[in-house]
View 1 (tube, helix red, strand yellow):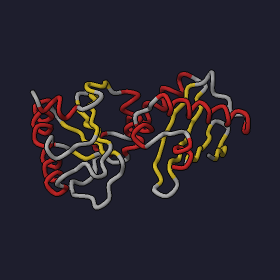
View 2: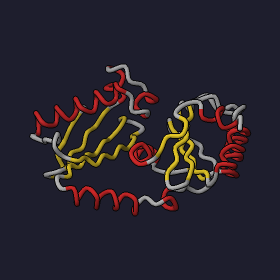
View 3: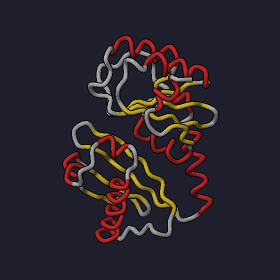
View 4: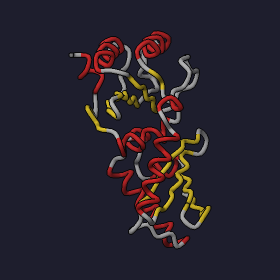
Amino acid sequence: MRIERIGENKIRIFVSYDDLEERDIDLDTFNYNSPETQELFWDLMEQAELELGFEAQESQLCIEAVSDVEHGFVITITRVDEENDFESIQKFIKNRYKRKDLVSKKKPASIYSTMLIYAIENFDDLCKLCSTIEPLFKGRSKVVNHDGIYYLVLTSIDGNITNQNLFDSIMSEYADKMANVDFFEGYLNEYGKVIVNDNAITFFANF
């Protein structure tokens, strides 16, 4: 792990896959904000305080995590000391990452990350989608609601989609695929409401 200070109130942390392996944290555990992941985060904050004098215990934090295919994850942490500033950052995030900006073009991708997020407009489409893809996807799934939109979050992607072309075709019919999934998943964790935390596809397929 490497930490660098890029401003008075901002640091950047580089977490490699080897770092995660040393703590017995796999990618699914990391994505789901497990106790192990939270412990890693606070260890990093303690290290940042010792090495760089970056104190954050009394401050609000704005956190953005971006995956790096070769090196793991790059986590940027901004310390916000004033409540008004924190609210303005929240507004900036909401305005900057509006749903229309996060939706990627509906076409199959040749390379998949460890997580996919899809936006579904209404409950009926969510149930129809889950019923249709249940035989095709065997990984983990959860559903989060934010501003009336249902977000289907899929993890454990590799090897768990039985017919990729059919899966992509069905998903494009019912849902919009989200870009910037590492950041957006954190945003949903902060502001969204979890409807079903695990095995969501099977749950909604039975409606």
